[in-house]
Image (cartoon, rainbow, N blue to C red; front, side):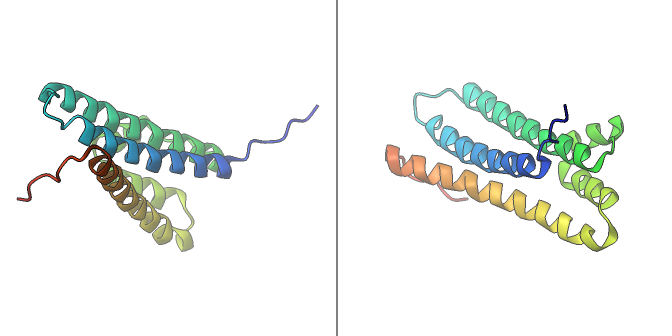
Length: 139
């Protein structure tokens, strides 16, 4: 009995949607914890936990990508991605894509980072509107 192979592209797409959605949630939580009753240590812990969640979602995408391409990332690359994702994810994409797709893949990665930043800002803005919290002072 043959079972169909999982649609890795659809799963990768769902993972990217989850990444952007988690960014929105992180923005909401950040503003919610900025209320006067929140302690700074709690806020820092929740922000750290949110960033770890984003990293785990990103690694899930990398795992699906490696399955799709039938490759294995070395452990040193995983450690480097955790330490400095903005450098080593593009390195991974450069090494795993054919020459004609490298630049586009790296560009989409940086667009994803921008999308996550905007999603976090959107979540924060929505929470400020709902809670009536004034925007933080500018520098």
